[in-house]
Image (cartoon, rainbow, N blue to C red; front, side, top):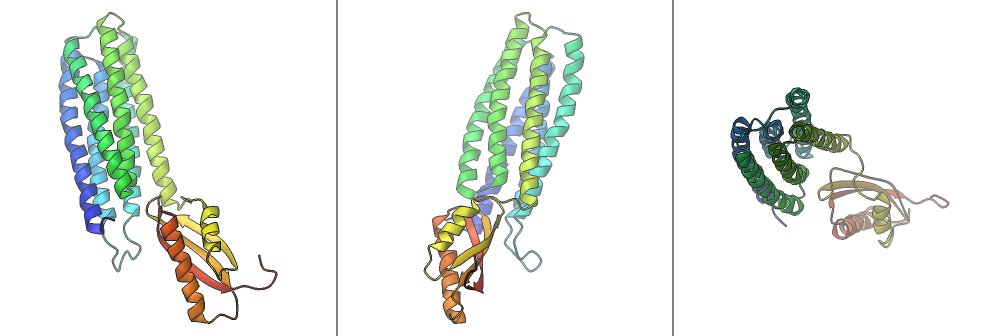
Length: 293
């Protein structure tokens, strides 16, 4: 398992790669949009520009979130990562307004495109670059249990599909179907809005301490430990891979404090070992009373 410092370096490095890729694509697509006068490419370029800014926000949030616990933040800085994800969602929704304001006028007054070949080449290359970036970020997200990288991987996969759709729109518009280009731009806006809402909602769920694990499965694992008479008040929060769990166990009232403590330690060990998504377990101990459920 990677150390805290190794995880921090890996996450920051992955986001730095994403920023570099998006910065390059933003420049290429802005140039292509200017040369072709395509609102579809313009919409994609605006999306990529906002995406680069979102990566920068994610980098700052991850830098904070991966700091080790200290006296002021004894539970660590994990929630800063959720805050960064929330800001990414808001940035994506802001991009929608820009996309719609660009596409609607062209939809009302269709116009022919210029240098369509350049547009097709740039958007095809963008699709390939985003596909490779998505695979890279997804692997890093799984390896390091990162909500931000997971969101960015989904973002990159959607960017790949978006680039292909925009390329198709450019091709059809060049063939004479002028209305297709602004329609594709609006479709890009819908995709961006949906992704922004999903990312923002997921971050809000984490900040609101929504349960992230099957609480019944946690209870079942705890009940397998010898000496545990009952388990209740099971809770989980955080995110899968770094989830925090707390629960109450009942043990025989005649046990000594040391004996009950040993059982509690065993419960925590069983849950942490058998449920990979769990990072930390807090066990509360109480006496079991006859007839108690």
